[in-house]
Length: 356
Image (cartoon, rainbow, N blue to C red; front, side, top):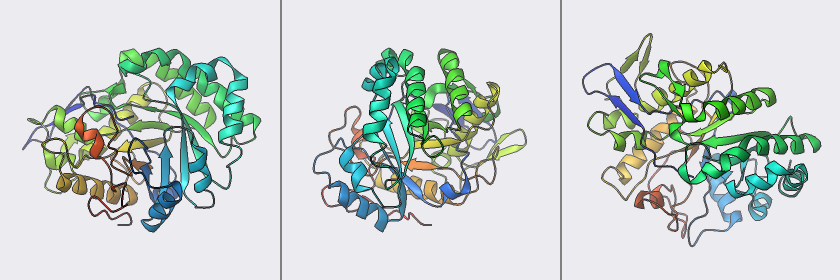
């Protein structure tokens, strides 16, 4: 899920220039209807999680209109029926080999996990695999990724759902790089596979899904990146890239990926921000104050439909990571503290305005 790959983007203090080194950027080019509510990532690596029915109530009471689960879960999908909440359903990485090698297996996956629940449950996307490219632990899945996407797409077509349920895959932050947003390119190790993925998305009207974490950029190069710039603060120094001016790191990262897609000949593929967030504990800048500032400013920015300098006026279909603190997650201590709510009592970790 969340990959702590270092994204080094230096916005030098007091200067209107920016260096982006090993920087991925993610842009969302979604229809305006998708921008009216924020989404959340509904991870389940925690103890004392509330029931799926309670989660629906929690989300609706907070005006959260979209959610993502990382693999199929029939109890959750049933609970979200008639909720009006958009849903992303994930295909787990360890399912990719079987699905890629057998159309029957892909058909069965769709017939068991999508068809019985749609349209009562508004399944909008299927995310085939999670951060497969670049991630060392996932290298064995790369060869199965595109074939699995193709087979799931065929299964969706067999179920006559291709106009309603779109197929994609999610990407970790370092699939692209550039020394400025306008110079963004996909890194050499993923270009061939990425070209196939982009062609698939273009042919099937699917969105490019990826994760964007200014937090990771900041901790990767804190001597050069303004914390205010990472947190959407109005005191941040603007960064200039040609005719464009960037007042926050999120937009700069977003537009780098736009340029990377353009470089491969795909300038208009819609993109979903599948994860973005800030931890509230576990490291020096992982504080409640910073997490509250980032997520509130992120939501305000997303719901404003301001877009980014390269794509102004476009809504940014974004999912905040994560709904709950997850105490069973592996990795850095911060991984356990991205949640917006405590799972045991469903109380907020800090105040968030989901309808600014």
